[in-house]
Amino acid sequence: MTSPDPMSKKTRAKLSGFFYDIQHAATYAPYCDGYFTDNAMAKLMKERRVNVQGDFGCKVFSTETMTSFLLGLTG
Image 1 (spheres, rainbow, N blue to C red):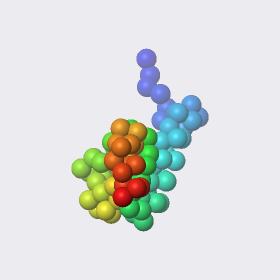
Image 2: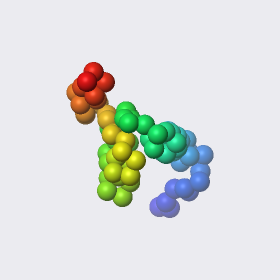
Image 3: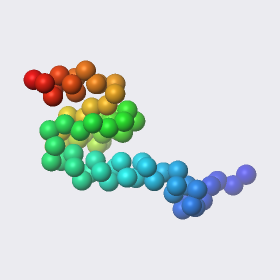
Image 4: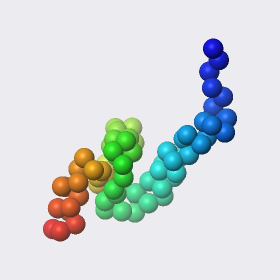
């Protein structure tokens, strides 16, 4: 069995949403106080190697941290 071609149309189509998420986060997170995204992207943005909050001061939120996000909006 051969491994899939990393540049195949199917591979690019499967990963296109992820690449757009990364581009969006890289463009806007450095200029935001808070960033709301899906759980997987939030986990990635909070990893020590990425560290969006530590590097840019942008708090990262997702549905797992919805309460904290809503409290931040109101107070």
